[in-house]
Image (cartoon, rainbow over all chains, first blue to last red; front, top):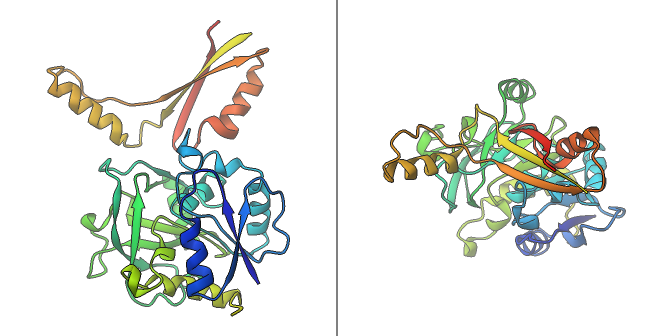
Length: 231
Length: 77
């Protein structure tokens, strides 16, 4: 079982994903160049964080239209797992695999810190083990989740909220929200639950020496759900 | 050659945090009449020939994100 780590120009977190998956989770992950037209032989897709194409036009906009994305969309629509942290979340929204969009942080500051997250939809392959609040790092300037009222209603009706930013008591407070996202939304799943996009980086929280290993709660659940562990 | 100017702006209902800072800075410079500022983008296209439907398609497929942005375009020369 293999994960395709898609490399775009300007992505800068693919090595984080590579080491988290291969070294900390025992999943075989390989780099796949964005110009490649096929995902044959892969069982999951990881769209890494970074600043693909310099965030030109809008964050994630150009990467979302790269050659490999038609394959990623087909892959996702077949119910196979696709994960996009940070810029990967922006790409998933721009590609239409998740609803809404990410805009500049309300504070206009680039926020680089740990945040606390509460899982909302507990039935997805990614969030089913997240019983407790998890602490996961963020590093973004454009993470303010926005959508219109009809979309927000659809998100609630279909239970698409994967994670919300919370305080230590698990409350959706304003000070726990690092970017001004609607309803403290930090991540979404798609209707089938096989696609997860989130601004925080669970792949940067996979061992204590990195400052915490709460990311394993999400990545292990995903690996076990799709039987990805090979070593 | 035809020059087409595409203007892309955030939807009025959305907070433009950078625009808010620009408005604040203008007020600091004694332009106290400024209530708000919105920052948009302009994409100037040089085209072999103009086809309105194709420019609209470019906006819908790439240049604007309908979730957060509105656009207009015009032939300028």
